[in-house]
Length: 191
Image (cartoon, rainbow, N blue to C red; front, side, top):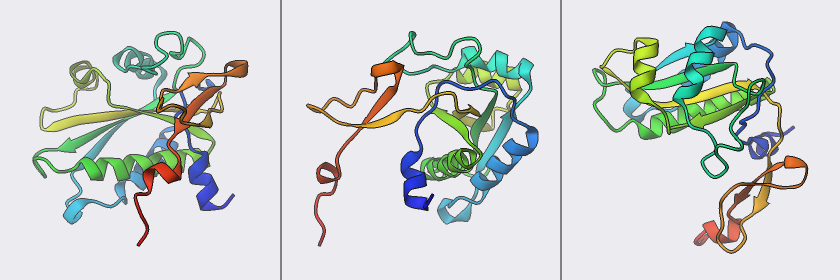
């Protein structure tokens, strides 16, 4: 598949097969985050890889799922992620201004995972205090977001935005549909 269609095929995944990911896989995904663009090349991002069954089970209640469809569409037992990456900013390196770094790093990580047929859900609605305590993350690291990972057990589809409604929804056969704005709506002009 060419890169254009590969990127267009990426969707947020909230249902996962239970085959375990390895430490090596998470290291590979984090390595692609490591080489993402960073403002002034300061590179303030740090990561916590969570791969053990015990810790992934403890992480699950600390993240929120599918706001438009919760709690009905939350991953059930047997559909939960088998790994997480906690994305942090080291405030001893840079106090603020790393949001774009995080976006680039997380997108690299998710695309690399997808190449292995591993789905991802990028979440910022998380219990930062609970995660900090569970993983013993120092106060100098600002917890930004969590990426839940696991082999895909669903295939969400792109849908057209109708009447301005961007909420994702369940369609036939419980397929998740994700409305995306049309190119004609987002390109202001080409000069």
